[in-house]
Image (cartoon, rainbow, N blue to C red; front, side, top):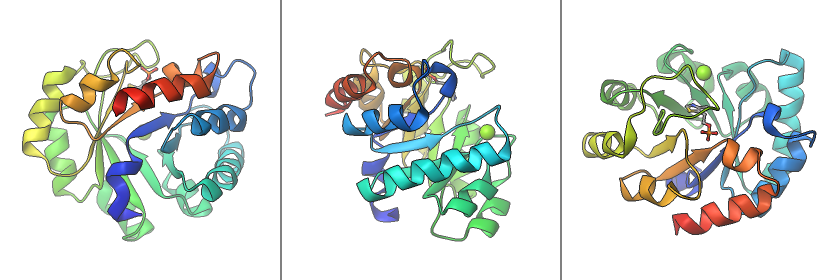
Length: 210
Ligand code: TZP
Ligand code: MG
């Protein structure tokens, strides 16, 4: 898994059930995977621990046979409980050293970096990949640091060797530019979760990524 990290980070779907328009999360994710999503990050900000665990188990059952990776946002305990492929942590979540201690060497740890300094620190502390957050400002998440833009990706790419994934305002019109600026992948919420056809939306973005 670790050797192929760059290829499976290509098109991340980050979930947001509030955008799924009455469809179940598993239904939307299954469609998106059929359209070419290479990795799914389960991001739940409002539900109970039990519900989070149930969603994680349901996604694991869907994704594992398809060899699509599952990453858990925020919750190291849920990642451990379901045997996820990775966790994604923000600047105010559990520090990398503690997460690594709990998760062991094989589980991937992704870190959201809101600045060049964050990215350098994450690499130095042993992160497996960095989420550059946000690349563009987005209505999906408004409590973000200022957008880093394509220049921010270029700057971080020059200084950091681990894989980079852009997140924030990415859709079919700009996904290619994010990769051209030096990212290894893109992470998308609304452009797939809110699409009438998540499958088609994933297909067209995946095509843009080459
Ligand atoms: N972290 C930084 S921006 C963002 C997250 C979770 C939301 C991105 O959503 P969208 O709809 O792809 O712009
Ligand atoms: Mg977080």
